[in-house]
Length: 96
Image (cartoon, rainbow, N blue to C red; front, side, top):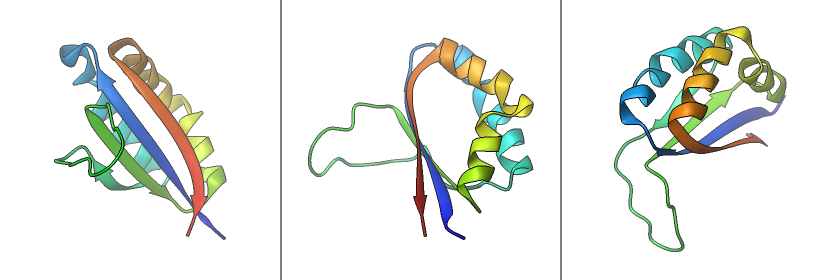
C-alpha cells in the first residue's frame, strides 16, 4: 500500500491564536498514525518562491488514513483555529 503525505503551507495572520493550533492538530495526527517529517524549521529558497511562514509534512500509512484524519472530529477544532489565524494550503499526495 502506498503512503500518503500531507503538505501544509501556512502564512500566520494572528500569531497568538495560531499558537493553539499545533497542540490541537497533533492530537488528531497521532490518533490517525501520522508522523511529522517536517514541522516548521529553518529553510532557504534556492529557486522560485515559497511565500509562507511555516511548512509541515506529515506521513500517513495510507491516503485513506490521511483523509480520515483531516475530516475527523479530533481535527475539526484545530482546522477552525488555523482557518481563523492563518492562510494555508493543504495538499494530500500519494507517495512511497
